Every structure is written in C-alpha cells, then in structure tokens.
Length: 411
Image 1 (cartoon, helix red, strand yellow):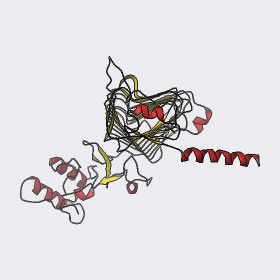
Image 2 (cartoon, rainbow, N blue to C red):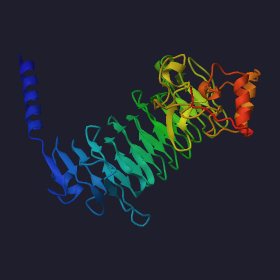
Image 3 (cartoon, helix red, strand yellow):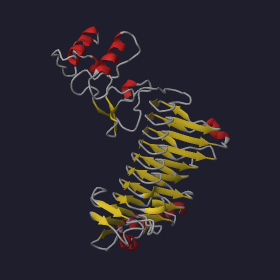
Image 4 (cartoon, one colour):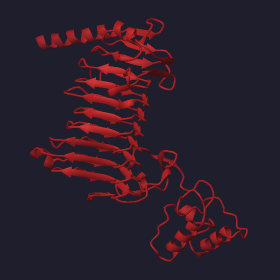
C-alpha cells in the first residue's frame, strides 16, 4: 500500500511540474539566449526567434545542468549562433559540464564560427540531444564529448560539415541517427571507447579528410552501425577493438545494411582481437581495398547513387542496395530509392551521365560475354524494343556516328 501511495505522489509531482512548464521567448522575454537559459527551470522551453545571434550572452552558452528545451522558432536555416571565435579570442557555442544528458535538448540552430581547442558544442562529463541542427564552418571539432560517463550524447537529424577537426568526437554513450557528417577536416565521427549500447544509424559519412567513422576500444566494444553510407572519405569505416571480454567474442558488435563506396583507401577496415560481424553490406570502388573479409549477404557492386558528384546518395531504382535487388531483401545504406536509372532516353549504358563510345564498348562486352553486366537494363535496351540484343548495338552505332538515329525514351 505504501508503495502505491509513493508512486501516486511522484506521478502527481510530475503532472504538477509539467503543468507549470514555461516558454521563455528570446528576445521578447529575455534579451539573449543565455538570459533565457538563466531564467528557465527544469521542463521549460527557451524559444528563440529567427535571426543571427552574436556576442556575449549568445555564445559560450551554459545550460547549467537544467533539463530544458532550447529551440528555435523557425529552424536552423533561419536561426544562427555565430560564435565569432578566433585564435586570439576563442569562443564556442555551447558548453555542457554540469551533468546534463540527452534530456536537455538543443533544436533547430545553425552553429558556426567557433574557434576552440575542443568543439563548437563541448560536453565534459555531460551530454545533450542535438536535433535538426547545422554545425558548419567551425575552426575546431563540430561536437566533442569527453569523460562521458553515464550521460548520453544524441545527435538526431543534424548536418555537421566543413569543420576543421572531427565532425563529432564522442566517448562512451552516444547515438547518431538520420544525420550527415561531411567535408570535415578530420573524421566524420570518432568514437572513443564506446559503450556496448552506442549506436549509429541512417547516417551519411561523406568526403571527410580522414575516416568517415573510426573508433578505438580497449574493452572490445564498438557502436553498432546500421544503414549508413560511407562515401568519398579516406577510409569508410575503421575500428580497433582490443582486450575483449569473453562475452564480446561470443557476441561481437555488428555492422549491417551499410554502403562503403568510392573511399580513397579502405571501404571497411578493422583490427584487434574482436572482429565486428558485417552483414548485408556493399563495399565497392574503394581505392585500396573493399573488404578485409566476408560474411553473410555482403557484396561488391556499384550502389548506383543518384548523383555522387552533387552529393545525392539516394539510390537509383536499379541499385543492388534497393530492397528488391539484394539477397537480404533490405534497404542497404542511409537513403532509399530516389531516382530512375534511366530517367530520359536510352543509351547511357554505364551510367556515366552521357552517351559516348564507352557505352558502345561496354555493350559489346555484354553481348559477347566479356563480363560487363549493365547496371540498368532499360538504358542498355537502346532501341527500347524487346530484349538487349544486336539490334541495340546497331542503333547505338547509328546514333554515335551521326547517321540520324534518335535515342528513344526509356521503356
């Protein structure tokens, strides 16, 4: 009976607290973002109007251990924290050091021009949830968490790009999902000694100077990685797992449903005593090596991104990473089908973006059993009639030699 009374009392306190949560408007109610935070108590919302916020009170923000929602009215495209940092006058956007965790939320800001020895968002023995933020153009790591302890760093639906260090440097408890970490001068994500529950999912790691995602663990743990796309980095995914517990050998960390393509060195690399279990993943076109080994459902095929050069890593309808084109029958990579492999006319057989003599060469290879397999059969059906055969070769020759053949629309 006493236990029931205590539960009801706690519930009543929660209802009472939530019913008195306050929304503090910046700059209407308080002149600066920090003033809004200072006035807030647990459960409150600090709501920031559109604009660019600079100077004291709008940078080096301290959440003071409070469980609050710091949110912009109109999203990151309309609301910027410009740290105005320099080597002579270092500043960051947010400093969390009072035990905050992912129940403290920062949502809908662009964070730029931080200059700091750590990160534009810096967590020491603390965490935070960053949601729908753009962290771009900082002379330091985009986000850095050290001495994570039991607190969680959660990055959800953020774009973290063009920072002069790592996009994210995280320790122990972290989760990254539905985000893009690209064009950072260091790694997209560095995970230091991650907890077994750490997770990275549905995230794009593109064109980072070092690895897309890398990590080191002295406990044999690694963040689970699922439905991520690693493209154009030095290494796609790299990890070192040492000194494992016996349970880690029996239940290794997992990498599943991922694409590692067109990275300059390894697509996937790992070292140490524990090897992650890699399943249903595609490693293709990496500069040095695609796979160090193999396991269930993995393959090496062009993933057929819609527009690699433009940074559109959604899939063509004919992609082997689309659910109906691989033996695992799952989506592989962070993004689903977003375009047709043959959107206009036929003839671009090698999916290079133009119809030229290389298409003629690969069509000859296919028809003579030379090993080429058309990634998009509709594009190879040059005359859009029946199957791909010698009549398609004749049509393509006529088109390329200027004999008057007009490429038809894709069948």
